[in-house]
Length: 577
Image (cartoon, rainbow, N blue to C red; front, top):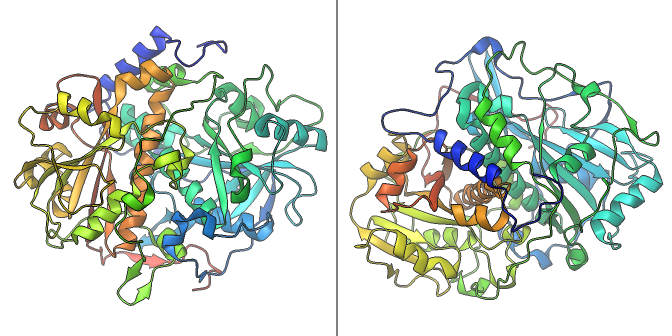
């Protein structure tokens, strides 16, 4: 697509490439999407990107024990904004992208992170454009976050004029004090090494999880996040230094994904998506920008090419366009989604935001017996809903109406009959989904659920075998309290917003998953994302025959079974419990 293409002007070739990739990368009962077929351990990618030669700014490890209640994350005005400083930047990245523990089995050790990842491969890299901050830098600069060290690598030093240009570009002349920019990118090879052609999907899931993680971290500090949805990929790659051949050489490249403005919550109304501009706000070749550091090579060899990933990546590289602005007036109010405020209690101890964020884990198995209460189930689903005027965190990050809806397999929820349910996350889509799903679905509103929660019983009955079967035969989809398929309003999204919006659907799905992870922690249970599912059999299960709607992610929630063969070690050597 050219830089002149705007939202609403379809690039037929790009749309066709996206649709072709989505069909090609489906799993079927008779075959899986193309992959290597075995684990080539000799080329396993390094999970940590570093830039040799870049100044390393160590962030002081925040002391654990911050008392902010978990529920307060969702009441944005109740958290006083922290000033931008070394300490607050450190806390932001600790809550957003840091390590949470190390697992060990024999001589093998691997890290876990705040933001989950398919196969724990972590293709997502984080960057920040920060103003002058005492003890971080005497000038504005671009930094790469190094999670193993909990440190910032200074990639580029900017002068005052360059920073002023940036703030004017992204703040439309009003960039509140204490604001900064954060960006995400993907090393696609990390996922392709294991998952082959389906890896592009998993990279975008991970971006969605990380985006929600960034927003939640910002909420914990009294900050807000505004996604800059109209910046072109070329501009973003230039801004983050990802287009600098001299800094990567033989190292695996990163694909620019997104950019957001972080600002004090009191100034949220002052930050909007940046307007169309003809020139990039940061160039890698200006004499006034000092670049430093070279990317490390992640694998000793990378001889397996995946042209299908290259093709879809090229197709979705976005162009600058007008911001998406949609009406959220018809969505329910927050009061109509939650019967009572979520107190965040586990037993007698109040759950803190920190404990939920740092304590999040991906379950590897579930016990097949534990049920959850109906109130807990309703509260979890309520957190997944945008609200009137788009005020609910983290959905205030997204400027588009919900494009992902949930087909739920309910197994063990006290007071609810087992069966197939639906949560329609946009009130305007109820009738549409009734038309495209099985004609014999009952579409009964669930009694006694919050008045604003659009939850429907579609069909009664034990659906454990069905849930497991369509999730690649994985028992974990049947052994929890419930599992779900995330159904995307797929073809209309491409027609409305263009081919580049394909990845936004995965981002929205990943954000749903991240909220469910934390809600599971709040309920004292666990959860995990399921990227392996049989696409078209999922559609058949719900009676979807048209390609207009597609399954984009699966998830399961229940009581986890710990693997006692593994040893858990602290995330950082100096961490204080």
